[in-house]
Length: 535
Image (cartoon, rainbow, N blue to C red; front, side, top):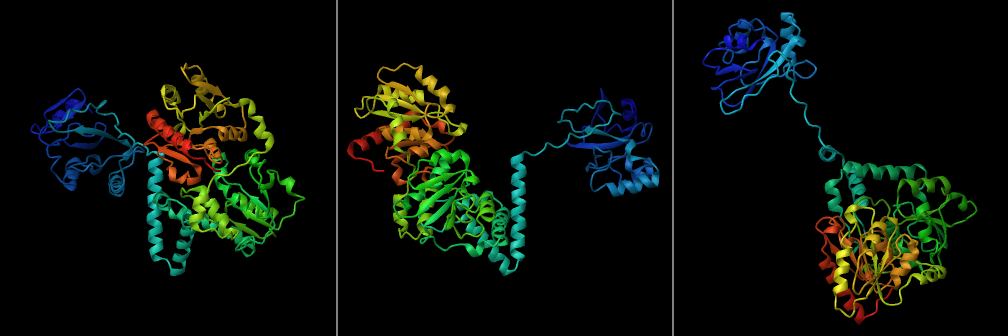
């Protein structure tokens, strides 16, 4: 269909210009209207009242209802050549009556209005399909899915019988609420971003799995009379979480309970020198000849449940964290409170909070092995590097410049860098700097985790961002300055016994200024000069 044919067909008062492949109209506002035309169908047809006649009158004029879309409502053809939802039935009937295929119809977008720039159409007879909608991001889809699930759960909950409501309430409460006073946690934050359907599903999955295998009748209300225990820990794989989750065993020291640990292979070396666990295993073959009175599970996760039901299905058991799942919490205090409850140790809630502290131990050989790395004077221990970018501090160089210029007599003049291989680049950068007073020594990538703990134990002060080495250092009596991003509230990572000043950023941990860290260092060193920290 040519531009001249359209120009001749449309009335003069309505058309201001038809040229160069676009059509504009100056008396119909700034709206876009869509005409669905069949190629060359309207050539020579009188279309003078196309914008005013109703559909039936227009049908009598043109002879084909489905060929033109009058008025202000666009009826586009979708990418499969079919009418969009709401018009398919109408046009299908007309199409069948007229005997014309809609696949031969093509779309032309016509911009109207003097204020809108005319839109060029690539050939008036060429098909013009609207741009496909932009796909929603994963975050948007997750948000919409969670919102839909929340609405569905609310609707089902309102109409459910009382027994079902009690089950749902119990599942959510036991999964998100810690029953011990004084244990800091954030259930409301977790519930705002997590579907209750997901929480109930996980709870029922674990509960029914235990019930199906006949384990619920073997659960002990307390384990105070048990002498030989196997503690199963198959939770998080990283060192920091494992250090906090198992720290409650410190309350069982010198109680006469014999405890072995079965854990993940990568955590074996972290606890193999422990003075509370008599044996540490990570291979089931090593347990074939062992005999225990009961099993102690850290939590009801699927790996622990499978181990219990497959290899120890006849033994009674107790569980520390039960069905708790999801909300961020102070894992160190939670571990101490759970051990106190399961073994009926008799500590009050306030006493549990006051004595909570990460716990690790090393044997005499490990303690002696770090002597060649110890400086001959007081020193600061700094943990460099990190796995997560938002928890990796990169301004150690600027901080060391401030320490080098400090006149504080409590400030050590030697610094030992600690960390794993991910801190080698930062350590090399700091070693290449020149300082007037400071002497820098690097042990990055040279020590085991327990050896790094012993170095931190000998330091005057430990500095580090939130991570495994920070939690390991908190198991020593050394005071510290701990750096946190906006995602990790310090009150959920530290306890009073950590003797640490926590600094939280408004974004990544790297946004904490060296001046703020320097101020905390001076505060800690002044406190250390006036008192002795106890483990």
